[in-house]
Image 1 (cartoon, rainbow, N blue to C red):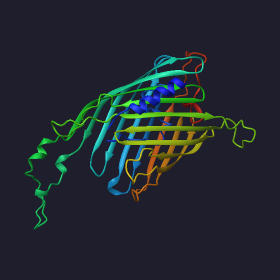
Image 2 (cartoon, rainbow, N blue to C red):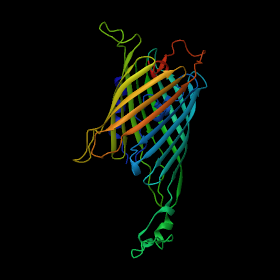
Image 3 (spheres, one colour):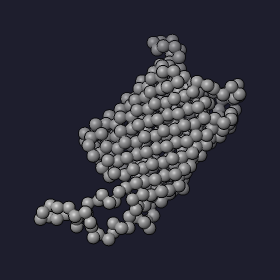
Image 4 (cartoon, rainbow, N blue to C red):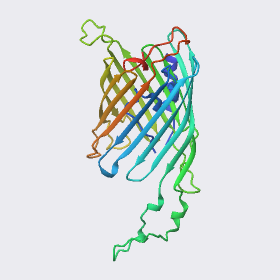
Length: 342
């Protein structure tokens, strides 16, 4: 385990990247948003959807949707697909991705196993430059708007960008702990709207993990049987931006309550905040479905943003792989077999 941690630290320290990807508060419920190595980890058919509304106060609103579907085709191999769509109201920018995902599991020993993941597919960014209002279109005497501009530079820009994208990840897990690392945009696709421009998309690094504590069996515990405490963390870096989420979630089998704090550990200016938001999280399980909700309470100087609302819905088939190895870990998603790991 020491060797694994040393390798992860070296990668973090040597990682160089320079546009921020969407970040989800409930990553511990839907780890497919972070790492393709989790494809098929539930050992059954598994699907999920998350809707994130960021800063619903007027023109700053951003809506992001992410969905996935995956399963296993053998004891070692998982396959699936993911789709994401993000829309920014102020800029009218739309970001869409459709990827296929693959994972492969290797048992290290009785306790530990490692999973490798690969995700690849199609990306598109849309921005309507026809809706731009330039200075020469405004008649300052009458206030009228001319629908035609004589600015020659507007013809150099494209309304749509299509690109091929690639991501990879690795994850280690055992009965009570899990740790993973993933890198998105490995091929650094060109996302320049200018026809002959070259703007490589910054790589996105994530190091994430968690540890379960069986608090219900403590002599002084007042919690119901089978209750657990999840400690989780997620470090993310893209270009000059970085974020570290730290969370504590108490799982009562059928529902869970907790809080995740978002921090900025590497402030880039004197006005940077170390603690940027406090995010209560809640989830509830009913048969094969899990519903989750979180609210990001802003603590920075961004002003009145009305926070960030995130809703998740997860479906996990109750049918399991009967032919898998007998010491396969029972996985746990919010109180039942699934994810996170237990």
